Amino acid sequence: MMYKGMFSLLALASTAVYAAPDMQSIAEKNGCFSCHSMQTKIVGPAFIDVAAKYKGDAEAPARLAQKVRDGGKGVWGRIPMPAHPNLKEDEAKQLVAWVLSSGS
Ligand code: HEC
Image (cartoon, rainbow, N blue to C red):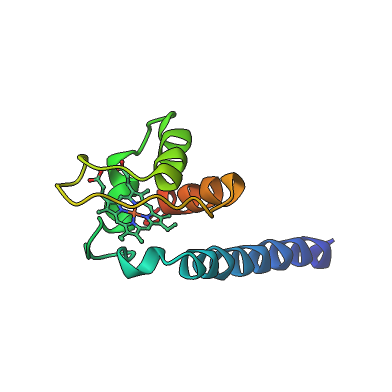
């Protein structure tokens, strides 16, 4: 009995470890980190600040996924984010979910 419990804990732990670097590399591949970082504002806001701003906003994931693909401005300052038309809709949603979960 003990052993079974330990195995499922291990399985859960390794899923979490593998999920994070995957999103990190999708973000890298799409150039998000040339303007963003997790902790610090660069050209765009820090991802932990984005997560804090939209905490509890149920519509934020869909709206922000659209904004990452279409580009947009005026929320964090005067610098616009360019469109990312090559980003698949699924990837944009996953990236935004990942951004919104950062810092938590
Ligand atoms: C050329 C620079 C640049 C790149 C590349 C870039 N961003 Fe941004 N991003 C910005 C700027 C600037 C803002 C602030 C826009 C504003 O004030 O409305 C922003 C805002 C955001 C926001 C918050 C939007 C809001 O309305 O609050 C998210 C989420 C985001 N970026 C995610 C991403 C992701 C994911 C990628 C990679 C696919 C990416 N960004 C690539 C510059 C960039």
